[in-house]
Image (cartoon, rainbow, N blue to C red):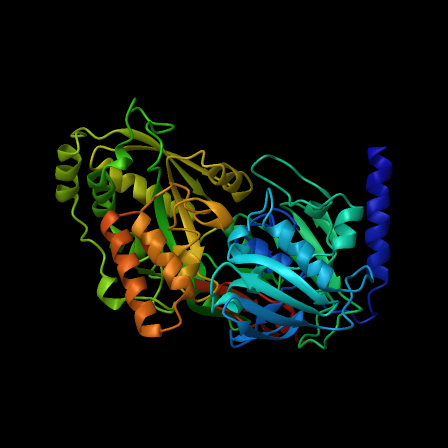
Length: 526
């Protein structure tokens, strides 16, 4: 049976290839990691969303200039303080030919806020969606929410009919090991459709023949290759086996820049890399400290912060391809406060003193969870952090693993100490205050606050920030919330990542600051 299935899959793949235009242009991409699923509601992670975002679409998206632009909605306006009217695009079809209607939007809302969804924070401000007719909806928010269009740019719309027919009405839940048809197959309205899926190896996508718009690309086929080894990925680019590589290992940037047939694209990313600590449990997991949780003591959190040599990480680990930060957002995000941007000083003697005052003069032992195929030099960063902390008596048992196992584990909160990165995709601090710094609760609040940091005043200010339209008042609220979190040392920010992509001669791409790569903007020279 397995042999027959394999032969059938190969035959279908060959048939799909044969149906491509005679002069079809293929784009070959190499990335260090893979989308963990084709389900657009299963993981709120940039690579996952950028891959699925070429197949599925939101109501509102971002253009080449990163400004909001129409997608499945042609227009939107606030008709009441808590009501947004969206006019939906007409004559749009899903890849299977099913018409796109308001029912699909309402279904996708219910799916995205339901059990197993990892994108709850995108719809957490929505109270309900009312259908006016097939091409008109009213989105009702729980309170006035002026940045709603910014928030939903990564909330992708699925076909109600397809999900029901394929038993995929609930999202894939990787935390529980639950898969369904949406893991391996897709039916969106986007410019590309999924043709072949080999998890952690490669996926193949072809241009959609019934896409509703003309796209600024001549690419007919995209082969997305997963190449975890840095040297192998670089060799594939240098030999011409791939057209686009992301990310470029920082140690190879200058080498690739020296090749006249290659171009390195660089720019600041909206992502901040940070450390999180379990501040909820009475006793830490994976630690030699019994009956007590050291991370509940601010002095321990501050000791960890001040023990980390961020300049050494910047120069030696990141090769100057990172910018140290003192906040959970970079300067490009609305709400950044320059007066709060300075980090606590690197001072291991002060850190040892804080540990002693907290009752841990000899340190303690704890496991640290870290991905090794998601962020730039993520494994090396964690190794450097572990080495720094060893100098104040803390023994770190580092568990670095592929994101396919890392994300399900930390999202279940099976962690005491972890590294994570976060991109404020709305370019507004609320997208960090609510899902990352908020007390875990309803509607996606604190969904990615995996150490359960909690400050009721921060939560109250976050709610006020969501609805305040006076910019001066709003900025004052943001400043207060960020200062409270900073004083609490709710998390330990490390640095803002720098984007490093490479393309071969003749390939043009648009590099967006959220690290998304829309294939509809890519052209391949003939």
